[in-house]
Length: 60
Image (cartoon, rainbow, N blue to C red; front, side):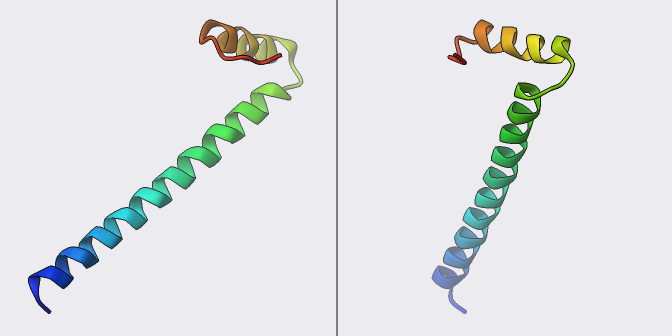
């Protein structure tokens, strides 16, 4: 193998790892937002709601 193919293979592996990390982060993030949004105890829901407002995130 020459240096160019080794570099492209390493770059492809690096991109794949970045995509995996992105997918995991998005899944966890959306899961947390969904759980907080539909939380049964009002205090948890209200805390998430107030945090969204504090971060200027439109929620309604």
